Image 1 (cartoon, rainbow, N blue to C red):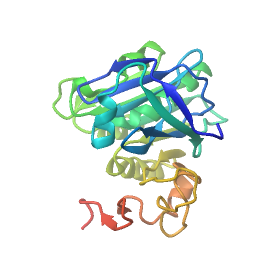
Image 2 (image 1 turned 30 degrees about the horizontal axis):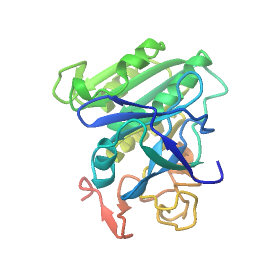
Image 3 (image 1 turned 90 degrees about the vertical axis):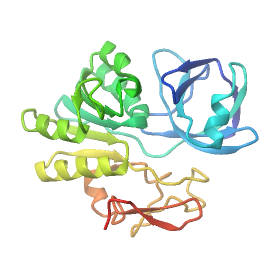
Length: 268
């Protein structure tokens, strides 16, 4: 889609207390891992991962965490949102082997749900390690089980599945299973731990690296990473494990909306 497009919201699905899914009747050309820039009238433009299900149309899932997304949660079916894209790199399924693992924290399930759907269509065996604070925030768990994904759930409060971090659950499982490739999306501390496990075990993997995006197509440079200068809206957000070794700021710091470097709290 070369020009911005205004689309009416066809349907709104409440996924949890903080997350809603917006359904649009438009055959958007995005692939797993890519994102759209979505204009919320009167507020801002934000990047969101694309989800597709059977048939035409696409959907995005949005957590109400800031002014723009809280405004979206107040919108109704029939209201208009602006779109441009799709942008960014895509997840790639392995050419050899048929067993893959996905590790999702929080809203990382949004891009991975599209990948899981495509992988199941091609008869890959998919293990999903999904983590959330509680049972109510395990996004898309039932949908993933319906399409044949093997779900390994973990929650901080133990209300469902393993009580603790999904990184620990994945690590213990990786001792028993052989994965041809691993995909991870979520908080950067989670992605860092999964990357360390995969590097140690020589498992190919891809990570979706989140950085603050303004233009979405590589002009402003806001989402560039050190020291390569790769723009996460063009060369990313999907980065494979070997390229990730060259991004020195991964797991250490990022840049805020003003461009200021901000260290992660776990870095001493």
